[in-house]
Image (tube, rainbow over all chains, first blue to last red; front, side, top):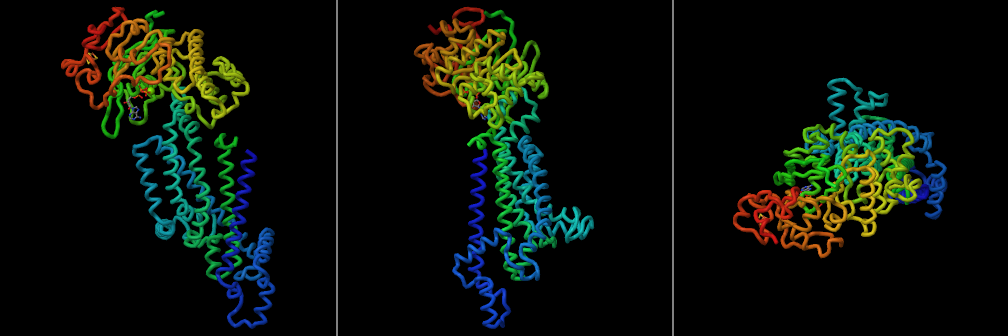
Length: 306
Length: 328
Ligand SMILES: Nc1ncnc2c1ncn2[C@@H]1O[C@H](COP(=O)(O)OP(=O)(O)OP(=O)(O)O)[C@@H](O)[C@H]1O
Ligand code: SF4
Ligand SMILES: [Mg+2]
């Protein structure tokens, strides 16, 4: 179990290193950062000074190592748009808002999709199964930003039940969270249903039944625990798409999180902030996948013992 | 041996599967009974409906396509067919146990052996000291080192050991009947023998009746008191093992016995008979064995054969054949 987790952590660190390399290369591919940093009419002396200050005159490998070293200390340079703050501070401030919204969306996805998927499998070919199928179809054919706008129009503008946009408590979060969760509910329901259908056909389910186990326990104790591997695997993907989804939804709902920040920073050519957001997202994504690995090991003894 | 005291009596059981191509009848009017302390063998080719008969009795037919269309299943005098699903949950594991064919897939991979045995004990209203009780039960089915094995997961055990665990689960409630559906097919020959001895030992200790489903006539000869022979969802012959082996009274039984060179040798499959069993939706009005039967004539092909006394003339020996008397 421990070696399994250590191995996975090592993989995560290697991935992270690869991502820093990509982020670093992109910052050098996407043109000379000086263009973004300096006014168009900068004097040669100014250019020279900034170049030296940023270390851009040194060999590229040295620049990368310096970048890595600074990143490890949480230093991603100063924000260009939010004067007087470091990029890390700017991103760090916005992170809670994104985690709140993403967390709520995640919660909604799990609480709705898992029971729905399980029940659709147990009551296969009944009305309930049909409802789940329709939800899954709708979810996968509606783009999140469009759904967000519709929800906003109907429930905030027309009915006035929720605020239209901006930062605030639960009432501010509900509409964007639903818009983000919708697609996930669809995907997760479908996955859970098919995983359950497969497990419910297994011999050990038959044995549980012939041994006199109550049907509820057959479904949840014997079948779901085995089927759960599939939705848990998806959780890694889910975390990733909630993060990227946050870019769209936070912008639509004017929710001041890191997604919104990413767009604003790109528009303002605030390169250090963009870079920091990307790295933060990468770390969150890798963390989510580490959690998935831990859950795997908890669920399945065959993984635990390897 | 036969004290004519049936603990399980199946009468005219019909079971249907609703396939997408239309409903098929996989059990077509099966009747038999098992007495207390007796072992009844059910033999027949693959697809003859042995498992479907067993699953009908347990009411764990494939969902949602399987259902009992008609008939009665009396357990200790009570008919199980009209019972609700939740009443049947109370019967399963407590009054009838079952052992499935493949030990490698019949234990839940994510729970320990102990967890799964203890669950069976709890279902049977056992409280307190459950771990020790589980260990004792594992000892009873000869699981070596059961103090340690109780904490193991299924993937850490051999097939023979796992099948013993399934055996332990099936006897946790001291059921009146145990249905064993080809429990040794997936095991090595030596392990098979040990397992059969275990079943005999359990039967001697508890007096439970056993329904033993198998392809292997050698096992039937060794283990069973009586047998029924199934073909295409029907019983074509029934009697004590001695009577049926000495005086087979249905051409299909004759063919089965001929396909076994030595009755005490293991034979995996009964395919030595020419041709294949009929597709169930193609069966006409006549005898379902007619297309493969050397004795078949026009009457066989058009009208269903009657049930007649077996050639041993024992009162409990029957066959469903027009020409049983012509067999020599
Ligand atoms: N899930 C299913 N879907 C469709 N047909 C099925 C299903 N299960 C069984 N059948 C059909 O029901 C018939 C009886 O099958 P059953 O499993 O009872 O045979 P069996 O005598 O137990 O054979 P075996 O010796 O191979 O276990 C066969 O024709 C089989 O094809
Ligand atoms: S009834 Fe006719 S076809 Fe059927 S087994 Fe007897 S002899 Fe053969
Ligand atoms: Mg079978």
